[in-house]
Amino acid sequence: MSVPVEIPARVADWFAENRRDLPWRDPGFPAWGTLVSEFMLQQTPVARVIPRLAEWLERWPTPQALASVPAGEAVRAWANLGYPRRALWLHAAAVQITERHGGVVPHNVDDLLALTGVGDYTARAVAAFAYGLRHPVVDTNTRRVIARALDGNAEPAPPSNTRDLAAMERLLPDNLDDAHAVNAGMMELGAIVCTARSPRCDACPIADLCAWRQAGYPEYEGKRKAVQKKYEGSDRHVRGLIMAELRAAHVPVTALEIETLWADAPQRDRALAGLVSDGLAVYAETGYVLP
DNA sequence: CAGCCGTGGGA
DNA sequence: TTCCCAAGGCT
Image (cartoon, rainbow, N blue to C red; front, side, top):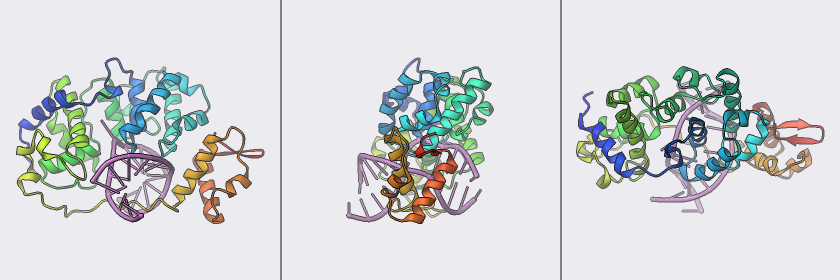
């Protein structure tokens, strides 16, 4: 596929002018802060992350600080960010950073990938954004911009790490600062202009180059991503109710109290067993507590 | 690899 | 109101 050579420079210039003032973009923001923010941003919107991130870093300014407290403290501080397993994984990663890397968030992508809860996106985001290294960073925003501007599709195909990283690599300038701006700019463009529902093409710096626009905005015909199951009444719903109770309580939550949270006994038992299996709840004498 | 994992806000 | 989906990762 041929890439219009103007795209990276246009995106980088647009980013310089239009970047949101987000905490993790502050000069001197620590790599640990970047790692924490990336964990929190996995499937949780920016606006909900910002206040929790500030609290978190004030309380645990280093990996060692987090590693020194029980994992349950992390789960409680995670509050209502959702997917509380991420709090458990972040705590595990803090322990690993402390034990294996002397408390320094690793620079190396393979070392980052070896941390619990760090996958292909997060590892490269930390290497690129915290340390300024030249790695392609591809998230859901970047994939959408590439799908539209370069491939002429309304939506990206299902994620393929090999294909997505190669596509982004082709856009990355050699210069470190420019590469950083293109990585961040593609994400930012997807986040605030080339959005999933109603893209603001009038504000897009590459609208005149966009393959999807040039093709007349054809509807997406490829494989759709699996539709999210309904939350109301789901196992995730019940797990969420139980976790909210465990976070609020500072004494063991009895089985009787858990019964009041959800009437369907088999589903309730399944949810609770799942939480115990995941390590998010443990039984202690009289009831369930955070780990 | 498809399914699973929370929560809340905008359209 | 209902639906969509948000800086993913693990099994």
